[in-house]
Amino acid sequence: MILCIVIYSKFDGIKNNKMEIYKKYTMDKADRMLQPIIGGELILLIYISFSLEGRFKFLGKIENWENQSDTKILAAMNFKRYLSDDIFIINDNSYIKDEVYFMDVRYVELFVSDYLNKNSECFFNGDAFFISPARKTLIEFQHDGYIFLHQLPILISENEKKVISVKG
Image 1 (cartoon, rainbow, N blue to C red):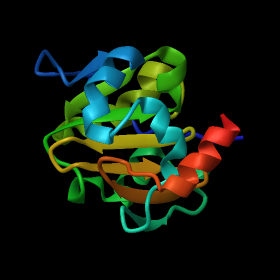
Image 2 (cartoon, rainbow, N blue to C red):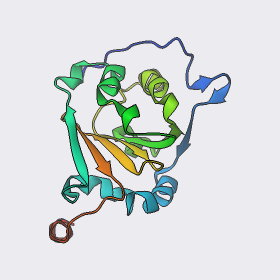
Image 3 (tube, rainbow, N blue to C red):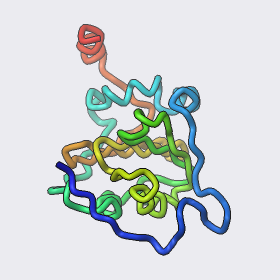
Protein backbone atom coordinates (compact mmCIF):
# COMPACT_ATOMS: atom_id res chain seq x y z
CA MET A 1 0.00 0.00 0.00
CA ILE A 2 1.29 3.44 -0.92
CA LEU A 3 0.57 6.31 1.41
CA CYS A 4 0.26 9.59 -0.38
CA ILE A 5 0.90 12.70 1.68
CA VAL A 6 -0.89 15.80 0.49
CA ILE A 7 0.78 19.19 0.57
CA TYR A 8 -1.57 21.83 -0.75
CA SER A 9 -0.17 24.48 -2.99
CA LYS A 10 -1.14 28.12 -2.79
CA PHE A 11 -1.75 27.87 -6.54
CA ASP A 12 -5.17 26.99 -7.83
CA GLY A 13 -4.96 24.09 -10.20
CA ILE A 14 -2.86 23.79 -13.29
CA LYS A 15 -3.10 27.38 -14.41
CA ASN A 16 -0.57 30.07 -13.72
CA ASN A 17 -1.75 33.60 -14.47
CA LYS A 18 -4.55 32.12 -16.60
CA MET A 19 -2.09 30.24 -18.81
CA GLU A 20 -1.83 26.47 -18.83
CA ILE A 21 1.50 25.39 -17.37
CA TYR A 22 1.63 22.19 -19.39
CA LYS A 23 0.39 20.52 -22.53
CA LYS A 24 -0.90 16.96 -22.76
CA TYR A 25 -0.06 14.73 -25.69
CA THR A 26 -1.38 11.27 -26.43
CA MET A 27 1.15 8.46 -26.16
CA ASP A 28 1.11 8.08 -29.96
CA LYS A 29 1.84 11.75 -30.58
CA ALA A 30 4.52 11.85 -27.87
CA ASP A 31 6.02 8.67 -29.32
CA ARG A 32 6.44 10.35 -32.71
CA MET A 33 7.89 13.49 -31.11
CA LEU A 34 10.29 11.61 -28.83
CA GLN A 35 11.60 8.93 -31.24
CA PRO A 36 14.51 11.02 -32.55
CA ILE A 37 15.33 12.18 -29.02
CA ILE A 38 15.30 8.87 -27.13
CA GLY A 39 16.49 6.79 -30.07
CA GLY A 40 13.37 4.69 -30.62
CA GLU A 41 9.76 4.22 -29.68
CA LEU A 42 8.51 4.85 -26.13
CA ILE A 43 8.45 1.08 -25.57
CA LEU A 44 12.23 1.47 -25.29
CA LEU A 45 11.70 2.92 -21.81
CA ILE A 46 10.77 -0.57 -20.61
CA TYR A 47 14.29 -1.71 -21.52
CA ILE A 48 16.16 1.34 -20.27
CA SER A 49 17.89 -0.79 -17.61
CA PHE A 50 19.73 -2.49 -20.50
CA SER A 51 21.44 0.79 -21.50
CA LEU A 52 25.08 0.63 -22.48
CA GLU A 53 27.57 1.02 -19.64
CA GLY A 54 28.71 4.64 -19.40
CA ARG A 55 25.39 6.00 -20.73
CA PHE A 56 23.74 6.20 -17.31
CA LYS A 57 24.61 7.24 -13.79
CA PHE A 58 23.14 6.11 -10.48
CA LEU A 59 21.95 9.23 -8.63
CA GLY A 60 20.69 7.61 -5.46
CA LYS A 61 17.87 5.81 -3.74
CA ILE A 62 14.99 7.36 -1.86
CA GLU A 63 14.31 5.08 1.07
CA ASN A 64 10.71 4.69 2.19
CA TRP A 65 9.53 6.81 -0.76
CA GLU A 66 6.02 5.36 -0.49
CA ASN A 67 5.50 7.33 2.74
CA GLN A 68 6.80 10.65 1.40
CA SER A 69 4.99 13.42 -0.43
CA ASP A 70 5.42 13.81 -4.18
CA THR A 71 7.09 17.19 -3.64
CA LYS A 72 9.61 15.73 -1.19
CA ILE A 73 10.49 12.94 -3.63
CA LEU A 74 10.86 15.44 -6.47
CA ALA A 75 13.13 17.66 -4.36
CA ALA A 76 15.32 14.67 -3.45
CA MET A 77 15.84 13.98 -7.16
CA ASN A 78 17.58 17.35 -7.66
CA PHE A 79 16.00 17.37 -11.12
CA LYS A 80 16.85 20.99 -12.05
CA ARG A 81 20.52 20.09 -12.05
CA TYR A 82 19.98 17.71 -14.98
CA LEU A 83 17.01 19.11 -16.90
CA SER A 84 16.40 22.41 -18.64
CA ASP A 85 13.97 24.18 -20.93
CA ASP A 86 10.90 22.23 -22.04
CA ILE A 87 10.62 18.65 -20.80
CA PHE A 88 8.38 15.63 -21.32
CA ILE A 89 7.08 13.73 -18.30
CA ILE A 90 5.76 10.18 -18.31
CA ASN A 91 4.57 8.39 -15.19
CA ASP A 92 2.67 5.16 -14.61
CA ASN A 93 -0.65 6.95 -14.92
CA SER A 94 0.38 8.19 -18.39
CA TYR A 95 -0.13 4.71 -19.81
CA ILE A 96 -3.61 4.39 -18.31
CA LYS A 97 -4.78 7.90 -19.20
CA ASP A 98 -2.91 8.08 -22.55
CA GLU A 99 -1.23 11.33 -21.49
CA VAL A 100 2.34 12.54 -21.75
CA TYR A 101 2.98 15.91 -20.16
CA PHE A 102 5.09 18.65 -21.73
CA MET A 103 6.13 21.77 -19.82
CA ASP A 104 8.86 24.23 -18.99
CA VAL A 105 11.07 22.81 -16.26
CA ARG A 106 10.19 25.86 -14.11
CA TYR A 107 6.67 24.48 -13.63
CA VAL A 108 7.51 20.89 -12.68
CA GLU A 109 7.23 21.53 -8.94
CA LEU A 110 3.84 23.19 -9.33
CA PHE A 111 2.63 20.39 -11.61
CA VAL A 112 3.77 17.62 -9.25
CA SER A 113 2.43 19.38 -6.14
CA ASP A 114 -1.02 19.66 -7.74
CA TYR A 115 -1.04 16.21 -9.36
CA LEU A 116 -2.85 14.37 -6.57
CA ASN A 117 -5.50 17.06 -6.42
CA LYS A 118 -6.18 16.75 -10.16
CA ASN A 119 -5.78 12.98 -10.59
CA SER A 120 -6.75 11.41 -7.24
CA GLU A 121 -3.47 9.54 -7.34
CA CYS A 122 0.10 10.31 -6.32
CA PHE A 123 2.44 11.40 -9.10
CA PHE A 124 5.13 8.99 -7.87
CA ASN A 125 3.07 5.82 -7.88
CA GLY A 126 5.47 3.69 -9.88
CA ASP A 127 8.04 4.55 -12.53
CA ALA A 128 8.43 8.11 -13.82
CA PHE A 129 10.56 9.58 -16.59
CA PHE A 130 11.62 13.20 -17.07
CA ILE A 131 13.02 13.80 -20.57
CA SER A 132 15.00 16.92 -21.45
CA PRO A 133 15.53 17.22 -25.22
CA ALA A 134 17.73 20.32 -24.78
CA ARG A 135 20.17 18.52 -22.46
CA LYS A 136 19.68 15.10 -24.09
CA THR A 137 19.10 13.63 -20.65
CA LEU A 138 16.46 11.50 -18.99
CA ILE A 139 15.89 11.08 -15.26
CA GLU A 140 14.34 7.75 -14.35
CA PHE A 141 12.56 7.23 -11.04
CA GLN A 142 12.04 3.51 -10.51
CA HIS A 143 9.15 2.07 -8.52
CA ASP A 144 11.62 0.84 -5.88
CA GLY A 145 13.02 4.33 -5.21
CA TYR A 146 16.16 4.18 -7.36
CA ILE A 147 17.00 7.24 -9.45
CA PHE A 148 19.14 7.14 -12.60
CA LEU A 149 20.34 9.77 -15.05
CA HIS A 150 20.53 8.56 -18.66
CA GLN A 151 22.22 10.13 -21.67
CA LEU A 152 20.05 10.25 -24.77
CA PRO A 153 19.59 8.59 -27.14
CA ILE A 154 19.16 5.32 -25.24
CA LEU A 155 21.67 2.81 -26.59
CA ILE A 156 21.36 -0.88 -25.84
CA SER A 157 24.19 -3.38 -26.33
CA GLU A 158 23.87 -5.98 -29.09
CA ASN A 159 23.90 -8.78 -26.51
CA GLU A 160 21.02 -7.19 -24.57
CA LYS A 161 19.08 -6.65 -27.83
CA LYS A 162 19.25 -10.41 -28.39
CA VAL A 163 17.92 -11.05 -24.87
CA ILE A 164 15.08 -8.57 -25.44
CA SER A 165 14.14 -10.08 -28.81
CA VAL A 166 13.96 -13.57 -27.27
CA LYS A 167 11.65 -12.25 -24.50
CA GLY A 168 9.40 -10.42 -26.98
